[in-house]
Length: 124
Length: 345
Image (cartoon, rainbow over all chains, first blue to last red; front, side, top):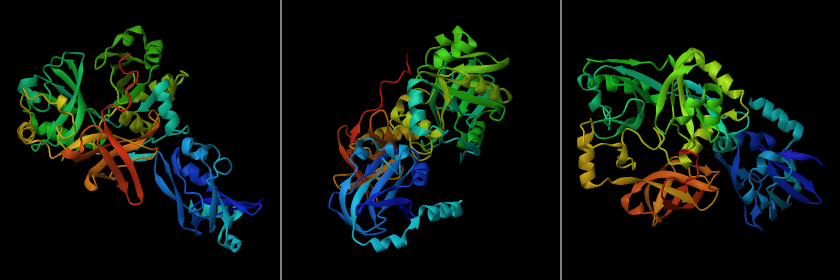
C-alpha cells in the first residue's frame, strides 16, 4: 500500500476507498513530545492543502493540512487522551482522521515515500 | 542545543522533555547549570556598601544560609533575581542569571564603595544541580552522610573530588535537591561520577522550564524583567521594606497606589499550552498577556503565568487565552500548581 506525503509532512494511505491521514515520523520527531491534538468535527469537508487540525508539543504549536480533499468520516479519539502515541507510532497507531476522498487525482500533487525522503534530504 | 546567555545549552537529551521531567519528579535529575554567574564579595558589608544593594538584608543572613531576592533599578524594576550565600561574616557569594552577568556585575559594582573586593568568578566556577526525591541518597552515597542533613536554603563548604566546593540545598524544580558549585576544571569528573548511579539522568533546560513552572517559580526575562516590579509579580515577600535599597521609593509609591497590573496563575481547561505573548482576555476585553505557559504533565492540563489588570486577577476568574486561531479557557488559581514535590522532605 503506497503512502503519499505532503511538503507540510502529512501522510495519507488509501485502503478500500478510505484515506487515513497523519503526520510523518520526521514531523513527529521535529515536534518533540506531543501534548495535544485538535481533531476536526465528523462530517467536516476539507480541501487539499487547507488546514483541518492542529497539534501541540512541548516546543511548538503547528497546523495540520489535508493531503486530499474529502469528508471526515472518523477521528482518532485516542489522541485526545494519549497524544503521545504520535511520537510512538506516527505513521500507524497515530492516524488522525479517516476521510472519504472526493478526487483521487489529487494524489498527483503528493510525493511518494521515495520522493519525500529525497525532499527531506534536500532540506538538511 | 540552543544558544543561551552566550552558552550552547542542552534543551533536551535523547529521552525527551516529558520523560526527563518525570525522571526529576521520581528519581534524580542532573542539570548542567554552568552558564549561571557567580560573584564573590569580600569585606565589611556596611563599609563596602553591599547591605544596600538588594531587596533583602545580607547582614541578617546567618553564615551557612542563603536567601533569594532582587537587584532592582530606581523604578523598582527587576534587574535580576538572585541568591546570596553568606560564606563567612565578611564573605558572600552572589549567584545570578547567565544572560544578566555583565550588567549585574557593573550595576552592583557601581553601588559599592570600593572598600571591599568584588569579583566575577563565573568563568572559574561550575555549577551542577542534582534534583529529585533520590537526590539526597545519591549525594550521600558518593560524598558521605553529613551532606544529607542540610536543611532547605542551607549550604556547606566542603571538599568534592579533592576540590573546594559549595553544596547548597536549593534548586529550581520543587523537588528535594542540591546545587553544587565547584571549580570549572573539576565539573566533568563530577558530572560523569554522578551519572554512574542508575538513579541519575541528565535533564535539559526544556524539562527544567516545565518543572519550575509547575511550582510557580519566575523565569527572569519572561515573568520578571526591568519593567516589572516584585509587587506586580507577587514576590513582595522577598522585599524587606525595613531597610534601604535602590528602588524602594518606587515600590513604596506603587504599594500606596496599587500596581496597575498583577501576575496571575491560571489553569487551562484542556491539554492546550498557553505560550509566551498569547493574549489574555477577561469579559471580552484584552487585559494582559501570558509570560510563561506549558502543558503540565503533573496536572494533565495547560498552565500559565501572565500579567493582567487587577479586576481580572481574582482567584476563580475565567480568562480567555487567545492567539490567532487558538483560543482556550483558563481559570485563575493559587500557586504552586503542583504541590506534591519532595522539596521539603
